[in-house]
Structure formats: structure tokens, C-alpha cells
Amino acid sequence: MIDPLLNWLQEQGACGQVDTSTPLTGGYWNAVYRIQGAGFDLVLKQFATSASGGLFPILADDEARALEQLDGMGVAPPFHSYWPQAPGGAVLLYGFVPGQMWQHDVATAGVLFRRLHQASVAGPFRLLPTQPGALLTQADDILGGYVVQALGVQIQALRPPVIDLEPAQPVLVHTDSGPGNIIQSAHNITFIDFQCPGLGDACEDLACFLSPGISSLYGLSALTPEQEQGYLQAYGDAQVLHRFAQIRPYFSYRLATYFVMRYYSQQGIDARVSQANLKAAQLEISALHSYL
Image (cartoon, rainbow, N blue to C red; front, side, top):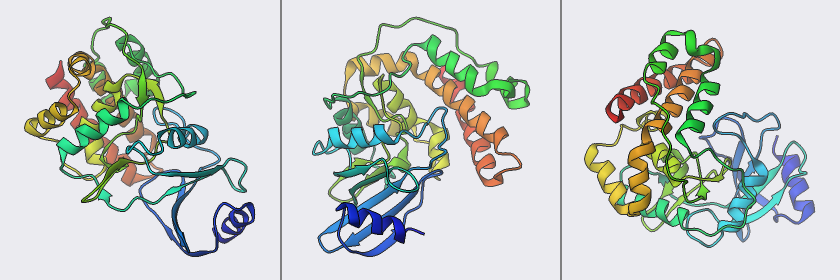
């Protein structure tokens, strides 16, 4: 029940009398509501106390820090307040952003990503792996014992060779930057769900957004080559795009291992999630063939 939590937040002065509270869908782990009352329209996000780690960890403090530092920059919802000691788990309040999940406007999306990666933040945020070797090591850890399964064997055969690249210019990376975490309206576009940000390589966000596997998890088709080109042109940072052409296979490989792990680990637990990740893995493996 959300009513005791709302009463607690009102006692803390976080908000006034809540007239309506509406559950929002989309996340796997956290409870999210839209709460409205006189003079406010907010999202209430209560973080799971036993949140998932791995490639997309739930980092409540970091999401609050990211929203607070990005406030007013046009890339994140308006920060309201953060209550780490709330009963039942940490609570983040931020302004509700009207609109729909991103669908087709690749040029506007490219500009949004560039704006995020140009944002100046103070941190602290976790440091993300940015070199091919580190990405492959992380992918091996994600795949774990599933390496002996059929899809594990298939993906291992596509493991790219280790190469060294120049260090990436560290920027704030959303990391879970697929279409489902972008809200667009006629007048606005913004990221939501900064629950696993980090300082790292801008290419990580580009790879996530362009991933056919990620798109399929949100019910969208893979972008066409023309759409990809339009997105990258709108992003417009020549240095990042040069690096992206070199490092994309490594981010794709890591995503593929994640989908494979989710496919096998959810068998017998959640058939819908398992099958969705099987499709994502197959799409990512097919794309990886074209990058190598």
C-alpha cells in the first residue's frame, strides 16, 4: 500500500495532500507512481531494497545525484527531493514529464544524447569500463556458466579480439539509454530512469540506443541503416563517432551476453522475460556478425 508512504512524505514536508496516485509501468524492479495534488505533479520512485546488480544496477543515490546535477539542462526530469531513509526503501521525487516513449525521431534523439554528454557534472559517479579488454572481461563475467549452453557457445564464437584504443574522454553516461527510457512530446524530449549512471565512454550510450536487442525489448523494430545514420549525424561529435566505429562490436558483444544470461536465468521463473531476451539475443548476435 502506498498510503502510509504518502503520509510519511507529507509529514516530512516532501509534498502536500495527494489527490491521486497512479502506478506507472515499465520498470522491472522499482515501484513507480505519478502523484498529483494542489500545485504539484510528481513521479514517486521507491527503489527495491533487494535490487538487481549486474550490467544495469539499481543505484538510488546515484540517480538522485544525477537528477539534481542535471536539473535545468534539458536532459532529465526536474529534480524535486530524495529521501534515502523512507520506510520501505529510498524514495526519489521528480517532476512528471508528459509524453510518450520515443519511437521514430532519430534526429531529435541524437541531439538529446549529445546534450547529455556535454553536461558538466561534479559527481561522484562510478567509473565505467571503456577499453575493449575490460568490456570483454565484463561480458565473460555476465555469461558465466551459461558459456556451455547452446547460445553461449554461439556468442563465444563471435568474441572480438582485444585491441587497445586511446582513452575515452569521460562523460556522464546514462548506460540504460534505450527507447523506453526516453520520453518525447511535441515540445520536449528527455531521458528518464538515471538509476545506473556512470562516468565513462559516450559510445556506451550510443551502442545501447542503436542496439536491435534493446529495441526489441521495448517492442520496436531495429533501426534501419538510414535511421542509424540520421541519429549519428545529429549527434555530430566526430571524435566520438570515430571511436564508436571501432568499439561498437565490444559493446554489442557485452549486450549479447547479457541477453543470453537473462534468457537462461529466467527460464522457469518468468517465461515472458526469458523469451523476450532470447529474441533480443538473436537480434544482437545477428547484428554483431555485421560489425565484425
